[in-house]
Image (cartoon, rainbow, N blue to C red; front, side):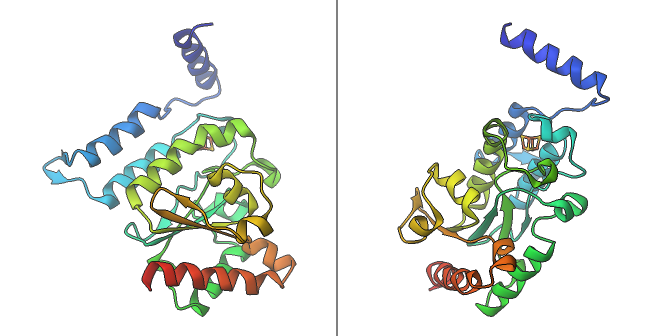
Length: 230
Ligand code: SF4
């Protein structure tokens, strides 16, 4: 089946499921292109806030993978659009799916406390996930889901332009660095994506189960803070 017929078949299936509005890749690409070109929107310059808001609206309607049909809310991301540090988790959990916000469950509360301990406020960082919709029962994301969702993250990073990306958890770190290395190895080596320093650390959910990880996350947050503001 050629691409056009395949797209028509997918659209018909989605309509049969009651999905009438589907975001397209080109719609999201257009937003970033306009922003980069310094184009104006209804007489106003496109601000970073406006572009991220439009991207979030596209993600909220996205059905590029099956997770789009099962979520309550997509979780695009939250925080300071001009943040020096971007925190990246794997995927939304149950509470995040309910609220449409990242890291709002118990793991998120621990992240807030650790941020405070290193002198950072949650409102001055940006928090997002590799995958924007919750996998059912918190199962591991499928490779095709990660591939479908990745362009949203790449655009998010291009818009926010963080100095540092802190990966919370092995999947986030492996996903963004395209590696299968263990967390122990990843924490002990330097990583960059272009000019951005990538710091892998443990997920705060793991630190709720194994409190020993808190000290290591704290140390990694100190390093991120020092690199971002030092
Ligand atoms: S997980 Fe990503 S690609 Fe899949 S439906 Fe959600 S936003 Fe779209």
